[in-house]
Image (cartoon, rainbow over all chains, first blue to last red):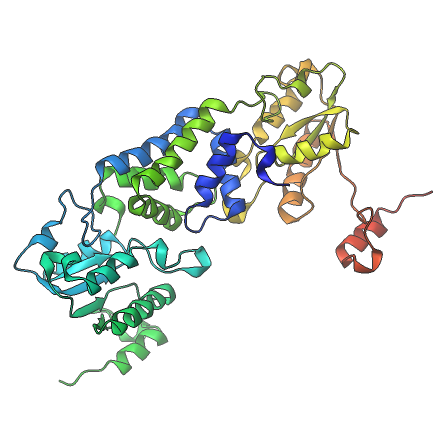
Amino acid sequence: MSNAAYPESVRRLIEAFAAMPGIGRRSAERLAFHVLRQPASEAMELARAVEAVKKTVKHCGVCWSLADNDPCPICADPRRDASTVLVVEQPKDMLALEKTGLYRGVYHVLLGRLDPLAGVGPEGITLSTLIARIEDPTKNARGAQVTEIILGLNPDLEGDTTALWIAREAGERGVRSTRLARGLPSGSQLEFANPAVLGDALKGRTSL
Amino acid sequence: MSNAAYPESVRRLIEAFAAMPGIGRRSAERLAFHVLRQPASEAMELARAVEAVKKTVKHCGVCWSLADNDPCPICADPRRDASTVLVVEQPKDMLALEKTGLYRGVYHVLLGRLDPLAGVGPEGITLSTLIARIEDPTKNARGAQVTEIILGLNPDLEGDTTALWIAREAGERGVRSTRLARGLPSGSQLEFANPAVLGDALKGRTSL
């Protein structure tokens, strides 16, 4: 049976949930029923939280990092090399990299990663903005031409898939991509490293 | 890294999503990032849809069916036998049963079913209201004592799990449970029926 049996507002709520990444038809119905069942105060907390985020959280129009200014302080900083763009999945990845104090380029925050099984395709993350930065310097920080993309995605299946996708798109536009090194984590013990980590460490060995 | 790195409103939105059934920590983050990335108009549609549902959709305080009156026309109808309660998962299941014109008892709509893998436990559906109806006639339609629960859940793993749970709880309170018959669907061809259907048909055979 279709949703025709439901009141208009329930149908609308099911549609709104179903439009989100990774939420299928059945999950959307389950979430809508949850809202129906919840005390109004709890349900309204979701509505209020969405409103608050859209009203109070700003992000940088260049790199999608969460920031009160647009462009963000990093994109605006003339001491940062805007021709190098480090691509990360989440704002907190960027914060972790900034804490090292070692990176002098700019960032691009995907706000997710490609995850076909969860229903997240290229349009589900900020990839089109990244491509625009590569193609058109006026879309990049301080009008700089992008010459290198550093892929700083999580080292797992979805991260690697996303990285390959970006590397291909960047390559087609004449921009080279590198990715963060993989190997033994500093301070760890070799005997406890898993085979995948040891394999990466062997393949990526460097001369001393 | 914890969520401490996020603005308060983003943390709040992640919490609101994570409080929903079947939404884990990672999914909640993904949905919150989706909201961050969406144009404000699209994101606000979710907020508005939640508000509209809580403002306009009423349900029957006895059986949780969607209805403009409380109690609903079925619970209020003196010609319906309120001592028999047919338990269904969704409002549309109830509509399908009403269309047969064969049922003269009342209903209870769970608004879901037990689904441990999706994070839905007994408190995630309207089970406590059903137990209250069994224990206390004043909570049931027109003050009737419940004497039979008919389990009309979907004939699959989660439906059966939920049915067993309800049958046990009802039995402990001295109320018997039955479930809808299983067998060959009328109008189908035996040669195409799968083994589970044929098994049900054999086990449930009736004398002529």
